[in-house]
Length: 206
Image 1 (cartoon, rainbow, N blue to C red):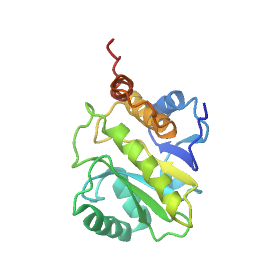
Image 2: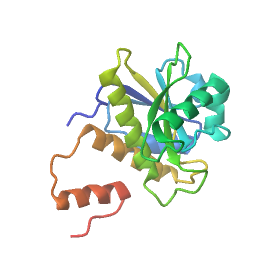
Image 3: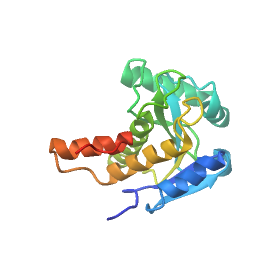
Image 4: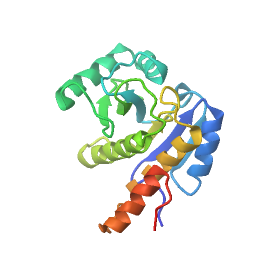
């Protein structure tokens, strides 16, 4: 089974050592995935930075604030403008959009809500939905644009305000990558129930 991302490299980045250790385990069987323990500002080469966001594009806390400080207020303006245009003011969890950062070295931001507003998402599959949406958005962008995204820098989803345990966040992110790379062709309900149980981290009942 091929295990590399379809047409771009993924660099997982986070300052939390425990999360990085869980990523190492969860993504052990995947090629094309690297892990950087540290700040995203330390990574010099990438085309697209992922923003684990809220649905309204307010970048005033956590890593979103760090992203806004790095690129400037213009990036929040571009995010909110696109949310208003494409999503009528509220970008749902399970979607991701590619936004222009106006930075020559790192030209794109994948704005990817993990929650509608700051809240505990530890009992949800929001991390899976966000990761899958981001992968889909980058892949679809590359299909239709002359300038392709080759390196994606992705922080952890839901592990700060969202209170998702590191192990669970890593698991949901890796399942999303597996399903993205291997779309199901078996549309029987039995198979789809098994897939859903895996996403939710539950053993499928016989």
